[in-house]
Every structure is written in C-alpha cells, then in structure tokens.
Length: 130
Image 1 (cartoon, rainbow, N blue to C red):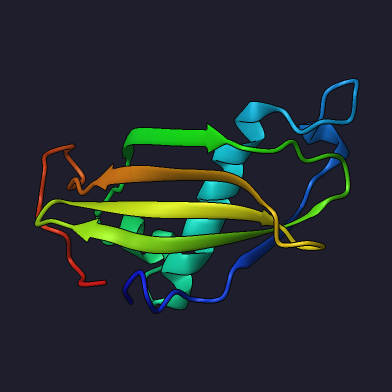
Image 2 (cartoon, one colour):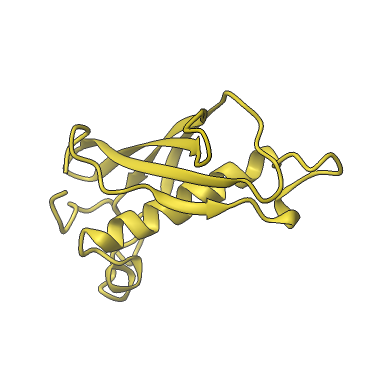
C-alpha cells in the first residue's frame, strides 16, 4: 500500500461517552479512533495485532501527532483513512485523516510512529513489509 492506494476508510460513530456536556467529541477520543482504524488497517493487510503479539512482536506508539480542524458531535459518523507514510527497519509511521461521512469535511489529521520490539522490549526488525 502507498499513500496513493489506501484501503477504504474505517467507519466510526461518535458515542455519547466520547463527548462532553455540549455533545462535542473529547480530544482524547481521536487517539482511540486512530488506534481502532490502525488495528483494522493492519488486519486488512494480513497482520493482526493479536498474531503479532502472540509471536512476540510488540508495536508501541512512540510518537503521536493530532491536528483538530472541526468539531464532531454525538452520533456523527466518521470515516478514518489510514496510510503508510514511512517504513524503516524497526519502525513504521502512519498517517490518518478523519472526515465526517455526511459531507466529507476534514475534521482531523494525524500520525503515529510505532516502534517494533521483541518480547523483552528490545528493538527488532519489523517482521513484515507494508
């Protein structure tokens, strides 16, 4: 996969528990949405987190960036696109776009960098190519 050939976006609906008293999604919810979309993106590419962890590979987030552009509210349906931005020997960097499904408006962008560790916590080469 490349930035020009992403998988279909992952659909998420803003839950009531992810909002504040005004019904606006809390900033921390976006991080969970990135994680959910990333997990499903990896699974679609044949690399489930469960299988990787069972084989002794860990992929902790070592860097996170989020830019909030528009608010979303309770019950909004969102489309989260995940793209591979960079793959190095021991890390991957993924980019995200969150759009409101009803009108396609861009509401947030971000990225995460994940390091590849073995079961003891030492850096190791990624066991896959994306």
